[in-house]
Structure formats: C-alpha cells, structure tokens
Length: 227
Length: 225
Image 1: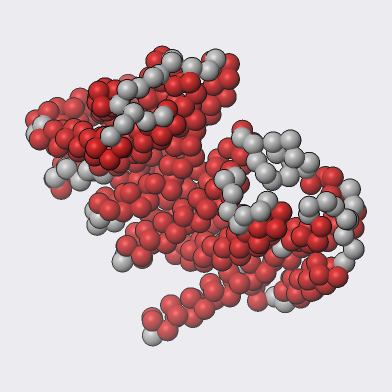
Image 2 (image 1 turned 90 degrees about the vertical axis):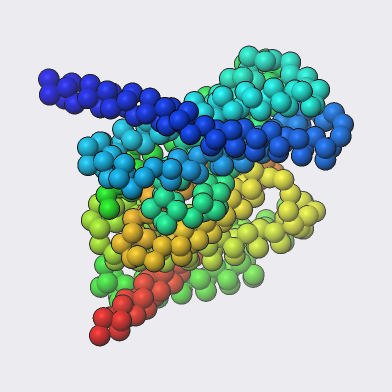
C-alpha cells in the first residue's frame, strides 16, 4: 500500500516537474526563439550551399545532422538554466529518477516540435519527395526521443563537470552513432516508401534502443545527483 | 583483481609462453591455402585476437565503474581508468592490423563496413571518456561521472558492435553471405592457435593494466607523504 502511495507521489512530482519545465520555457521565450532561429539559419545555410534540390539520401542525412546540432544546442542548457537555489530545492525534496525522467520528457516534447518545424522548413527550401509520410513522422518522433534521452543524461553529467557546454557535443556525439545510423536508415526507407514489413526490424531496434537509453538514465542519474 | 594476483607470476609466464606460441605459429605455422586470403589469414591470430582483448578490457572498465558506484573506493576507479587506456591501445593495434589485412583482401585500408565503423566509434567513445576525465579536477567527482559515462558508453558500444552489424551486410566473415570463420576453423590447426592467441593477448592486456595500476598507486603514496 505504501509502495502505491510512493508511486502516486512520484507520478505527481513527475507531472508537476514537466509542467514546471514548460512554464519556465515560455516565461523566458527568448531561449525558445533563439533555438528556432538557430535551426532555421542552419537549414538556410544548407539551402544556399546546395542551391538545388537534393537527392533523398543527401537531404535525409542533412536533415538528421541538422537535427543533431539543434538537439545538442537545445538540450545542453537543460541543467544550466536553473538557479543554484532551485537545484538545491530539487535535490532536497525530489527523487532524482523523477527529475531525469521529467527533464527527458520535456526535452522529447521540445525536440519533436522542433523536428516538425525543421521538416516544414526543409520542405519549403528543398522539394522533398517523401513517399510514406506516416513512417517518416514516426521516425522523426522516435529519433527525437532517442536524441533527447541521450543528450539529457549527457548534459546532466556535464552540469556536474563545471558546465562546459562544448563537452555535451564531445561526449554525446559518439554515444549517438548507433541511434543515428538506425534512424537514418529507417527514415531513408520511409522516403523511398518501402513496405512496413521491411522497415519493421529498424523500428523494433529503435524502440529497443530508446528503452535501453531511458532505463540506463533512470538507473545512472541518481549517482550523478548526490554531491 | 586483488594485488596478490597482480604480484603472482604464473599467469605472466603463461602470457609470455602463449604469446611466443602465437608469434611462432602465426609466422611459421601451417595454414590452409585459401583464394584471396592466401597468407593474410595469419592475421587472424593478431587482428581478431587483439580486438577481443580490447573487448575484455572494456568489460573490465564497465565492471569496475559499477563497483565504484556501489563502493565509492577510488581503487576501482583507478582500475577502470587504466583498463580503458589499455583497451584504447589494443583497439588502435587491432584497427591497424585490420587495415593492413583489408588493404590486401578488400583492396583498401578503409571500407564502409559496419564492423570497422563500430571500432572507430568505440575508439571515439573512449577518447570522449578521457576528455571527460581530464575536465574534472576533483578525484571522487571525476570517478563518479566517468563511471556513469563509461557504463552508458559501454552499453551503446555493445549495441553498435554486436547488434547493428547483424542487421546489415558486412564484408566480415559470417555476415552478408560471406563464409563464416567455421569454414577456416575446420582446419583444427588454426583453431589450436586462435584460442590460445586470444588468451595470450587478453593476459598481456591485463598485465599491462595491472602494471599501470601499480605505478599509479605508488604515485598516490608518494603524494601522500
């Protein structure tokens, strides 16, 4: 019974934290706008560098590279923007596993929205020919999920290492290789419009990867927490 | 690995004997005559086995990372650090021997092969591990953060080198319609060299690691005085 009560408080804390993150973001929305401008400017740079429609393989890779940089930029600050006092408050009253899950959830939401904005900007500048929009959108969601989950844990590590923002990219990119390879393959298949049965192994692999990442951050983050 | 194990001599003698055996058989032993592979098949005793030694040391790194997180004893962090370092050495050696082999059988030192990419990725991951370690001046904090990163990195790397290559075609034996090692290993002669060679390189790696650990412990002691 007490276990159940603990679960409900944890859930309560979790939803409260996610809501708090969203509210914080909209309160100083210049961070949000700068993020948007960053990825739009990157896409525009890609457009003026190529100046022509790209073949699917190239724009798919380009899209995910831009997503990777946007994600790094967005998530690197997720533990930094909080004041020392707020961190102390979290540390005293909250369960660390709940904190990492809430932060990860918020970053997933943020990056998914950003992903769809990026996609529409891409379709404005390059003529995209995606055969299976459903599969591509699913890939976009799964990719945002994985990118956010890995980078949130990494930024948690970096926040304890004197907040050197450049470290997030250095530590995060090598960890993202397996995810990026799979996601690029998955969305590449979606662009070509191959049958679901062929793309299914990649889908399962993405689900498995994302679950492994979340479970690992759930298990490991409490060790970062105690200071 | 406790210090009395590090000081005992029998397994070091075994390592030396097996290494001598590996080199002797590797350069002079009987090998099956295979098309394309020809004499390069001898590299099996060096390239693949060094790579396995690297894997053992990486497992060691993750294992001691977990031990550190549970016990908070800096000795475990020391072992984790040094095993990652020696794993890097073996990884680079395995990569170089592999590139020589690839140059003669596949025609180029670097081809787009999932296993090659996996090795490159694991080297980059452990390079990032050392960058993280260098960025943190405080001992116990460095140990904690690098243990967390090391465990996470290890799991990601296993996915990359064990799971992903199974899902794509590879030029390596046993994948993408290529004949597996079993075909070569039917030659019982090679099997008799291959397994001892794996043990030899692994023992050498552990030996190198334990020496580094002992040097660092002496350094600690000197700093304390």
